[in-house]
Length: 254
Image (tube, rainbow, N blue to C red):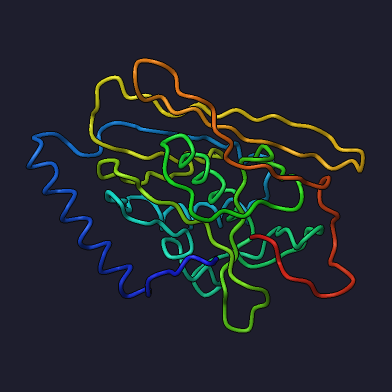
């Protein structure tokens, strides 16, 4: 069942409220609310094109500093909207089902995949996430998250990454690109003995040659390690074929 998303105006109104709420939290607790890195991921971008890196940096600048309050829902497409050429996004490599072609905003899925990995480590509730059909160049299979924004005149249905802050204190996204490294983290108030969740991947190659990946998560709360729980099981083809497909199909990612 699709997740209903708030309107863009409501999203920005909530963002303003979250900024005030974060300040009030600091006054109430007597601490800086975002001085501790709760979960962090780094991705090497050196194998990507200049256009892809520019797109990732532009999207990271949009997301950087945004807040995620307790029980709030985060939508990647709402947080990083309007990924169009008129906003400075470049035509770059894009996965289109089993093919790799050029599209405005190409490369953004590297950022959404990093956000997904941080959400797993935090951990946040994963409400909606879609894997790619093919193995990515920069992200381990099973830890990717495709996104696609519905634009005027564009094809396909929108695909989003949606997560929820399930009772954690107020959090803040830090997303920066330095040289050719993307760093994504969630910042929160200082907490003693805080430990992120542990993530493990189990890979298996089927008879048809497809790579299937199971991702399991172990929460770190309590004196004893908790049981492992399955997060996802995804199957992928090989690396994408370069060049446009013979017929138009629904796009799979940016």
